[in-house]
Image 1 (tube, helix red, strand yellow):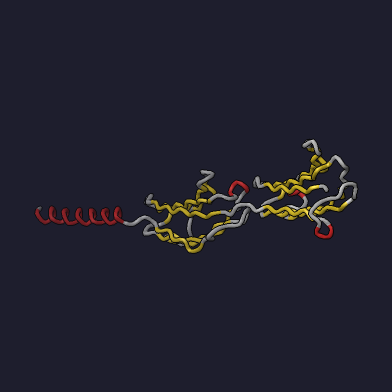
Image 2 (cartoon, one colour):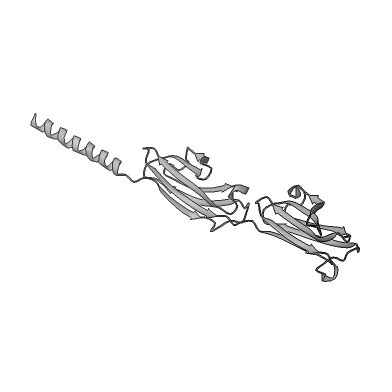
Length: 223
């Protein structure tokens, strides 16, 4: 009887030890292998990471923190305790000039969890506007028809170009309006407009805007 009791204690101790070792097993380990230091506007994000687990992996999920949405989730692994993943995701206009945050969560078969968050800044949009006259002139002559070239560029998407005449009484009138440029030439718009100011026109105003909300204005005087 004493022998059986002793054996029972030994077996119980062994089982307890096994349980303690199981409970002390570490959570999965997430290692970032590569990620971009920063992104240009609308550039696709790509990063690579590995996950190692003491027990079998249950799932790996990636959450877009700003959108508070899980953008991908993987279950079922060829190698039960490790995985190597490359993640790609389109960045939208809402990310321009902000910092992207992605949270990686790994869960093993015993529900031990690990998380790691990546932060990737996205550059602001850059909008340029040039208004060019023949011979490098910097003003229009009243009563003379002159070709005026407008050149717009954006690192996101161009939206519109608004051309107005400014009268000597400070009133403004639309001369031309070029809208939905993103559907035609989203990054570069080059247009020549012939202007013939009369004696009542003091200047022409060229106003450009892109989809990130950047604006540029150039005022071309009339002499």
